[in-house]
Image (cartoon, rainbow, N blue to C red; front, side, top):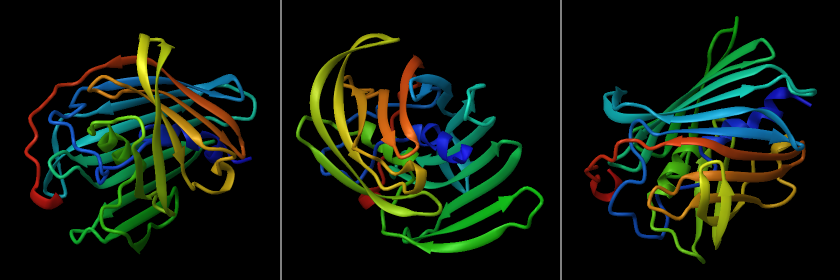
Amino acid sequence: MRAQSKWGFAAVLAGLVWSATATAQESANPAFGPGEQSQYRVKYLGVTAGTAQVTVGAPMKQWGEEVWPIIALARSQDVIGVWPIKDKFVSYWQAGGQRVLGSDLHADENGKRRRMRIKMQPDGKSALVVKQKEGESPRESTRDLEQGTLDVTGATFALRNLDLAVGQEHAYPVFTGSKTFTMRAKVEAREAMNTALGPKEVFKLRVQAEFGGSLTSKRDMFVYLTTDPSHVPVRVEAEFALGTMVAEITDHKPGRIMAVARAENGE
């Protein structure tokens, strides 16, 4: 089984829930801001296989626009069946428009390096994708997309900005750089959960996704977000074709809550 597929779950941890185009009302205050950092322990078949770290970076300019870089780092541990992996994924989040301008992936898996850049086009209906393996020339392609499409990271952070409630259902277009699909989520319940951060009240969300290959879900995934205004993801459970994986939060540092000027009509 390919290491990339095994560790793909940790890579998507940076955003494993979804989008700004939800029918729920947006929260008056953003749930996160620059400086926020979350640490996770990732288990594969019940054994700790690695860690993931998700950080909201300082405001910066990307492609001429103001963005917050959301940076996900995934690291594997020395576990049987898991190759050495060190991945970095950066999603460029535009807070005012509640959208993603694009992303950069730097992957180092079993000594093989590759890069991928996705740049959403100004019309919002297509994306330029540049892929490059170490020692090879870059390959460019353009993909047509449904307007409002996000990457998985941006979709997660957009959901956190919503006023969630039990019974809500959401369905959003997601683009991974190779595949487009609709990710669906339902807020099923409020529960009490013991976490490394202490006892927390959480929303339990049932999630349907279509990653394909070894990441094909054998059953619906479950994602748990705190019910406080920050909606911090504290646990993710998934049973893929490659086996069962669980991500649990181990540490969280809040960021700066910043006033955000919303763009009119998503522009």
